[in-house]
Length: 176
Image 1 (cartoon, helix red, strand yellow):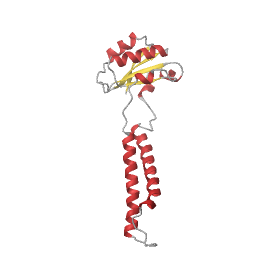
Image 2 (spheres, rainbow, N blue to C red):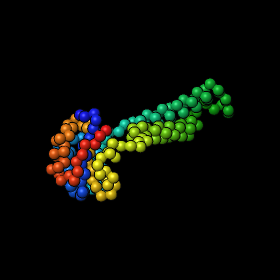
Image 3 (tube, rainbow, N blue to C red):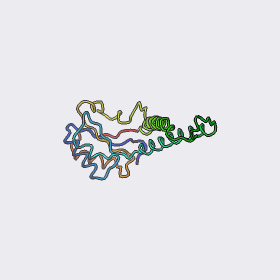
Image 4 (cartoon, rainbow, N blue to C red):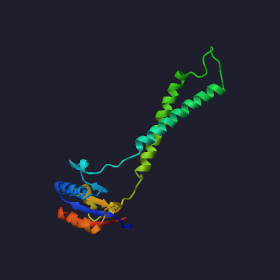
């Protein structure tokens, strides 16, 4: 793995060449693959590895902590600052449900948005792929495929040769 490289990128002129190269790269065993295309290419989602994200667990834990904290806050207030109204019980859980529900949703939402921003590395004003030659056409009519340097099987020379077998218009090393 090279610390000075983000990866090796290849530019393709047609979606068919791009999909063939993506399938070839995945068949060769590369897992850390990025694709930049001007529009959705049918079949691309099945070939790209989906990242495993801990967001569901983060939001669940935040919701449980928020709901538990809200319930505890109401129970504590009712218990320590007792106010007897009509001999009703101090620990009356039906009265605690609305606030518990609202704070569960509020906490899960706030932590979910902050977790999303943190895990996505946002705000990100620059990306190494922006320095790839010809990348300005990725939003117009070119299809870019990049294998990142942190892939366990990364070898720049082998990747360049592999991309050329799939009729890449341009193959370049992308600096980090």
